[in-house]
Length: 243
Length: 221
Image (cartoon, rainbow over all chains, first blue to last red; front, side):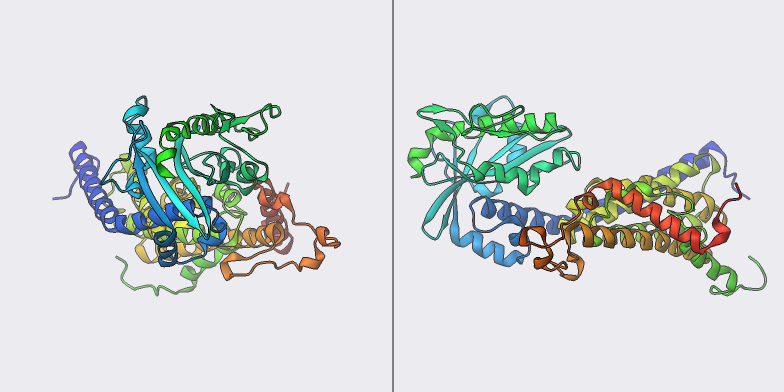
């Protein structure tokens, strides 16, 4: 008996079978590839931290093998986690805290957030790298900022984003944007007052605490600005203990 | 099933491979898949990975759709094609993320957008639904390479003149340092090459050259 291809029953059966096959296939693939993808993400995070701490430029770090990055990281970076009051949290691996998820999970409750610090020793220079997270136009933006041994001056910074517009918001990862934070002195404190950093349009009023925004990417720039403004504040209470 | 079996590499079948390279090229003649040709040709390596992704998706989709073409209910055939293409594209995306992470980051959304690449839907609808597996396979190869060669040409020109490198082959600084303006020379990397609009001019250039060489492509009026 020939099957009527255009009957409703056949159509439904066909779609159910097709979707089940495709779904099963994708689920299998996702679980199989997850370890590789996670290794890549961890490797990238190490590259970001090392680059912010000034070991080498991001581009040259990207050319290194994963094992070399891991070795470099384990040799020169130690990490701690602090709570909002600046007391260390024991038994937490700072590296495993996904700052974007952490930020989302504690959106309006900075008091229960965990704050990782990566202490990087590059020859004799010590820098403190802290992760930051915020919202861009289409999705999260995040980054790592390195403060020098005075725990005040920015010595390096990297940004990344999930899905900002290529050519506009995505420019936050460009070297030209990143360089603005280190080409002149940027500090998070003005005397004893916490300033944070800002991304502004129309000229800098506080040249030590502001950088120029990206033209055509207002919302991404605002997101980065909000992230930079608040990122360093919670650490103020912890700095004394880190020294 | 026809009684006498046609060879897979008969003249008629070879035409399926050759035509899309030139006479019915998906980009320059049918003007399909332009979006990705503009967006991801900034470096040769990106163009290559993108082309290979499209090659994989197009071949698999054409073959799968051709195999089940007599089972697909007509009413939902477009959705069925979409489900198959989407599954393949997600597969490619996951594999890229696992093994060439850097490139996958640069291709960003454009891998996902293969789903909406008109070349793929076009070939499925126009060819795979009505032809046997062998010819569909060849048709996919032909069209994918028709897409590939244009992407590679555009990518090559943009990378060499835009940033003076070919990272795919580990070549950097193709332009001698002494030529650069900052060293007293006459040369400067062309910033326009790094922007999408230039790809449109390059594709237009390809179309021009191709039509000048192949007179029968020129329309009457």
